[in-house]
Length: 230
Length: 230
Image (cartoon, rainbow over the protein chains, first blue to last red):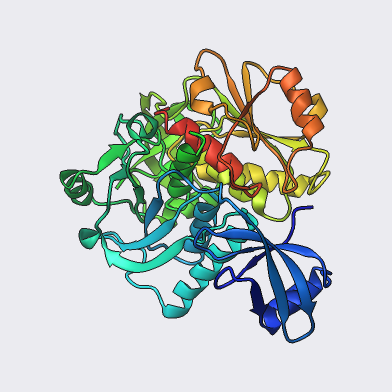
């Protein structure tokens, strides 16, 4: 049984958690003296011991630091159009498992939604935090409020899935610079949007000749990346 | 706007559909004389014209046959452990979009479920049919009732996702023979199960160092396959 992973603000010799996390440790039947892991969501992870546990708080003492091994060689950003309903939560959850360092929400021409409420954005951030625990990552991906596609900037390489392209992600991918993968809304990106991205240096890659739903394409693209072993 | 795709039992000069599909064509505001597409779920697809449409039936007349271009060069089977709740429906839907020709359900050692009801299996088959329409495939994947993992047989190559493996799917994949990808239940496959599969010729491949949920792994693996352009 792998030790329970606890998110903390920062790794410190002694870390105090509030009533909510204390209750959670109770539910997991942890007791004083038990071993856990702590991580700060920015890549630092360490062993820790439950030094004190009551209804109001838990105090953990820092153990050995672990090297974060679950991250890609360069940060991977998923830039994804706003989607209806709970689909973005599913995408954020899977993207976190698949090693994305950042999820940048986008407003595109054929948008399924043009804005996202503060509560919903907060919920996506919680989904990312929960998924990073479950997938044993020390880094929680940032989920960034939407920007119009035309205002998206990126560092390194940007790949956009484009039906009809014959370029293969794995042939074009390099780990010398950061990687961004971009997927559209249910109605797809407009041709003009793809053309404009290519004009700015994006590479259009194939995901085969079938029509993918907007929530499947990002998982498939990130799957192709992690299948290279990162 | 792409023409509406209608599933028929077999392509024939004149095809009659029942009240349910007739109502659906009404909802889509189709009228006599409109063009649609027909497909038989086994790879044949053609244009067709609505010759008659009333509340009880629709009659379609066959047009030009289309070559099915949405299939992989060799059939891809997804062999997936039974999962709880509605997760299998999500997996079948995504696998259909990603070109799987067949979904073989499995009973594994750490099983989330050991059997599946007839109604639930029927529902998975409907999900596959609906997803094949939406992804514009002429083939509907078969969804096969569960077999114990030890009784699974396969033709060609079998890839199993295994944390710790350094073999890459894309390095090992060949399109000379059929392909099967296999993923486990929430608790993962038992080491003995993986060892036994490898003994029978399976190749263990990596999906990176993170822990993937049971419903993410098949989508990621199939994503890696379609990213090769098939």
